[in-house]
Image 1 (cartoon, chains in turn orange, blue):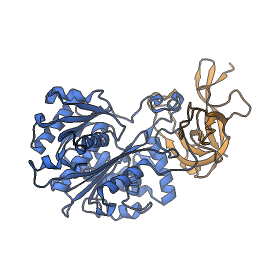
Image 2 (cartoon, chains in turn cyan, green):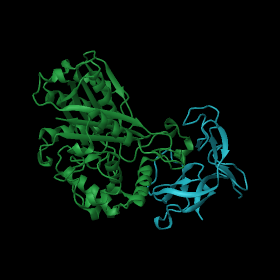
Image 3 (tube, one colour):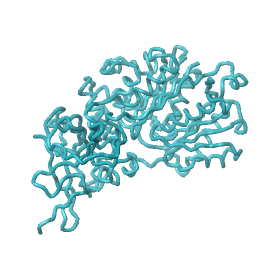
Image 4 (cartoon, chains in turn red, orange):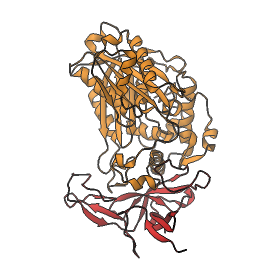
Length: 140
Length: 381
């Protein structure tokens, strides 16, 4: 069975795409950048925010691990028995904005402050013949 | 603005209490605070009640007396109690009222807090992806802090061990068992570098304070404890805070830094004048960071201070003498009023086995929580 890849949420990353990018926004007034899109600027309140496709590479500004199964609304589909911890990071996307993301790596020995990472689209869970995909950053 | 006195404090123990409702715990705390102040509920002209789980804390009126007074319900994340305290103080400072009560109560189920991220201005997927966790934020912030300022895992364990040891001395605490640094460092990792025994837990409890004008206080006491300052602040654009799906590139100080500065300025004192401290120790890393954010040391000095026992009872600057959140747990609405209760007990010399020496005169308390809100209160004799 061939699974159809479906993004876990609309308007988070460009999909389908050979070079997917996270979809953020920028305020033309004060130049502040946010992720994901939001209806107004979080710095000056302007309603004129514009879509901005974000860089796909960056560096780890901070990281931690998530080693217990989060309560709802977490929707990864695991049970306490099947849950495997994952890494989480704040990624500095080439000086454009810092964003929070899951990391593909959760081994503290392999996660470095300032380490280079790139955006990847990863399987999140399966629903019937649909593979739900989400985004993560992978050390390079 | 008029001076405000903390006339009485009351605390329902923190922990787990079966079928007992948060409202009934709140009523107990109010009765204790009234008794401590030497007044009755009929003397109270207004009140603020804080809770996360209880929609209408003013239901406590049905337990202590429906006198018709204005009773305002507040919720402001982990800073809820600091907010109830400030609003009550403002009612007296302004001259509108002479005697008021701030009460906080909560009854949480166990495990990390959760909610709907949409109510925090974050997208639904943020929760679905497993990013909507306060514990993850604290792990991230502390991991970076350790990297930047050379704090060790041992120091994280020292903070938790200190707070459990203080909890042993506190009959009202939830956790009353000492844990060694080794036991803490061997407990399961939850959010690197923070382990199970380094975190506080949501639980149950209530606390209340009676505030009054300095003039009215003369009727009841010759040795008043003044509420010198209260300050609340929210995060600036750029600060990486709880439940931030993104942050500007240029980092900003946390809201605690600004609340702290404002409170010191209002009180006309500095951190060097403080004798006893209560900090938001959601986890042991948070206590370490908050020591610096509130001016009690420079970033990185905590490593030596914890090694030297500076923040223990009897140390140079005791922190969380009642065991803090780590030993008491966090019933959100009550947590900050528990802090005030402990500071008042210490300043009056009524802290029993955990009394700090040296006749303390100035107490300092700080709260911090989602989505990036801080509250600081300073009291003194």
